[in-house]
Length: 116
Length: 110
Image (tube, each protein chain N blue to C red):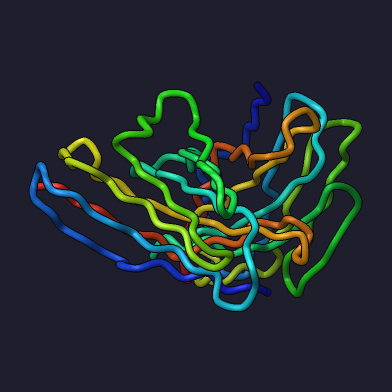
């Protein structure tokens, strides 16, 4: 298999502040990382796709200035939720894929964000 | 875009029972994955199965790409099988992203 970690697992922040979530591939180099959001009792919705060293590609309806994604290395991608509001409260999940793993996506454990 | 529907949406079983979960997709796919999301939110890869049949312990999966469906079989279910099962596909026409199905929520009682 392949291991993907996320940090933090849970975060509570005040409205208007920014929060950074890290996603790391621990035992393989991820050429592509994906960020998803999941609301309670719903499916996963893709927010953006990032390739190492290039700008992220955002899905329609996702504000790129609000959800900043950086993929600076083959093992690390970060998602920063800027000026968070209560409606940004959600479960954020990252995944990683690589050619060596046949492009199968492996998922992190998720980060539960609560904005008060 | 491609639509991915799963059935049933909810399933309640007693320990030891067998079940079949279905995933229908509306267009050609390059690949299909099955996942189990445990009660803590972690997605666990079950199968990577664009076509054919695979087995792993009490679980097996079959994908018939020409008829646009996949089945996940769970035999002798255990309480630890509880959670949500998702299928996700890579569209033949857009191979960059997984499209997730609607999910099947499974509860297994002792």
